[in-house]
Image 1 (tube, each protein chain N blue to C red):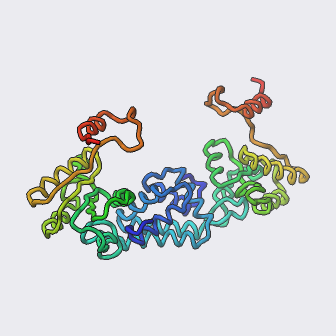
Image 2 (image 1 turned 135 degrees about the vertical axis):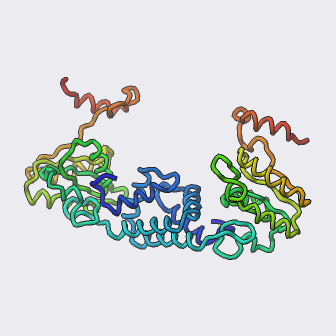
Image 3 (image 1 turned 45 degrees about the vertical axis):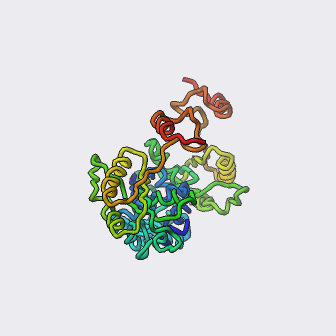
Length: 200
Length: 200
């Protein structure tokens, strides 16, 4: 920030700019917005940040984010505890929950195996998943990692660890997205959709 | 936020979502980012927000934002204090300073006259500008409000108040933006560019 900007303002802009997806102009806009708001608004934002950072940790069963011992899904008795859907990030749970088609539990890996970024299996919550399966009572593990190279590699790696434990391991289906135009589907997706075709 | 999200996380997402230009997905992303950062990062962000909100106020001369009695520009003795450039918002100063062509002072109105939004002249820092001119020593006032209906109206309104005080009032030139394509210039801008043509 240039010298004609007040120091506390410049510091706030710098802080906002360090957040993901926020550039210099957005950071400026946010900073000016906060300065123009009642003091209570700034206090609430600051305390929400501290509260979330200090109270949120991993669920001791599924590694989802929670402020209690267990996350709301693991606490819910109506959920089928014998099926685990493995996802990369907590936000993937929101996506799957929106389908309203899934009533079992999740396991959050907090990333995918990516040797290029220096993320190996030990950086992810894989041993927690193996522990859950070891404890028994698990019928099926659904691999719902992203359909990327890293996601695929992670799904393959975990399925190889789980198979010897005698648990059924499945993967989300590949195919054409609903509502999309066939013309714009890439060839790999289309090939997978052909391969996985179902009788109607 | 759905019931499967931890409450402090949901509150933080709501807080981020209430900021301008941040939608639900960006808010989620920011919240997850902060939770994943060291505690120190969250503390710094929270304290920057509070510090900026609590220490920043208007410069007693030009109404720019500052944490001291005077803003850095009004404090700077190398600046020509006899010319005032009137802008709508503090961020407009950054834009003008980047030209490195202007070495005088500013006056920030904090908005523009807009009867539709209920913003009249008394909501803006206009009387502070009149006081500065009344105190004497001002050669020229440059109206650099936005080239919008509200900015134009504000420039006209202020110039009518300043003219009787015997001060020279000017307005930024209209014309085609440098580097743009004539083909895409709108007709009003082009008409103003023709009107204001200069001999070369």
